[in-house]
Length: 288
Ligand code: GLY
Image 1: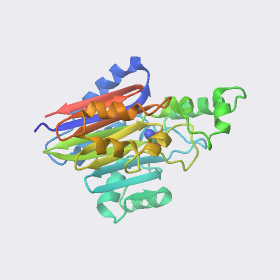
Image 2: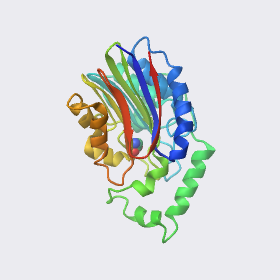
Image 3: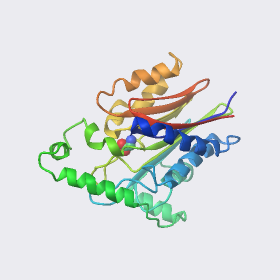
Image 4: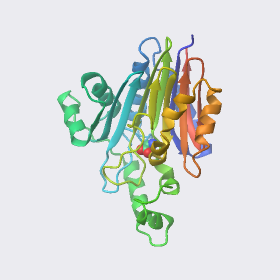
């Protein structure tokens, strides 16, 4: 059976940037070994994207409205899950998520508890901020403070509204990976979140069943507006439908429920793999 690593760099990019994103992501995917544990491969791909400042994960993560950076990440294999929520000042949240899964009796660690856990294991203090993130925050804040602007109107309703799409469309570039090696599945996800957002906000990426799911039938990860993805338990739903129809049709059907909300998924099953998004999304693939 063919081994598969499929990765994405986030939904919501301009269509004319997808080819360039694909080149980079295919390069990342091609440099990952597929001859061992699928979790190693998925995490290695996500780690590379976290270290690339062009992606909204790890270095290059978007900033919260208060200027801080809090990151979410998760990993999963059948029957096991680990995540960090709103972790700060670490270089690779996805690796801390793996440690939560493998070294604790917990599935989720949040905030300063996650940071303390990381320090205990030797993860050094690290500043993931970039000039690009600072500029993005500046523009976002200017829009929010401009009476009459779309963002101004939408921000005043932020806590009540469910349609955050126009508000966050430029900054929802979560990264993720799914892998199938020797018939075994794994997935990993990492994100700086969806800007602009309040400090403490958690999206879909570290929530099992929402932004990530791995079970006996396959592995699924999502990208897009976390609030909407969580409400639909997107990845769990896709996993449950695996085998009922072609994988592409399953993903297309589930994404069709996202009206005016950007969303994308990648998935691998026992005999298929694929992706589907309702806006531009770069992907990379390695088959072996
Ligand atoms: N999908 C990433 C987020 O909403 O945080």
